[in-house]
Image 1 (cartoon, helix red, strand yellow):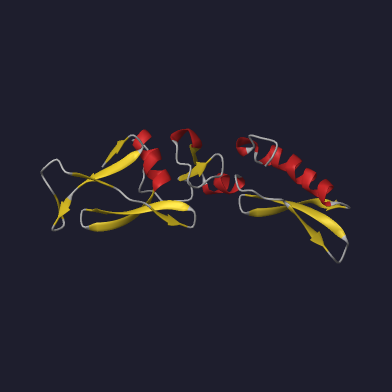
Image 2: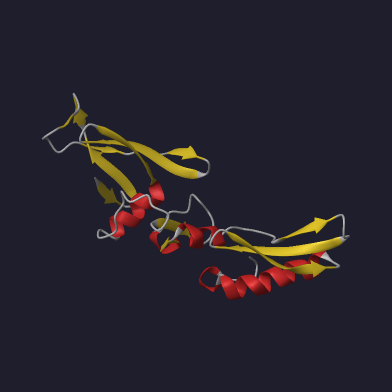
Length: 158
């Protein structure tokens, strides 16, 4: 496989084997829940690979592209699943990747007529508090996010 001018190419396959001549085919990607994905056959085994993981691997050859564990994720800094520029990608755990999601961090609790703020860390919910207005609850959530998820908080918009 080759990456040339942000386009991936693979050697041509004939009867299940890679050809010996210098014929390279452009790899096409399809949309899969917002992510770009392709199918590649390696050693007669079909693999589904996401473009952002291929881009990261192309620039970081020591990274294990085949490791699909929660500690081996690639995160889009700007939250755009199709923006696969290397400058927009970073290595992250699944927990860190979840911290980069757009979240309001609060909901209205009818029984108490209050806005509740909450945040998740390592899969566990942490209650922040109850507030009279949405704005107060959301600001409390953002303040907690800046503390708990500081690595992934890069702008004030969140």
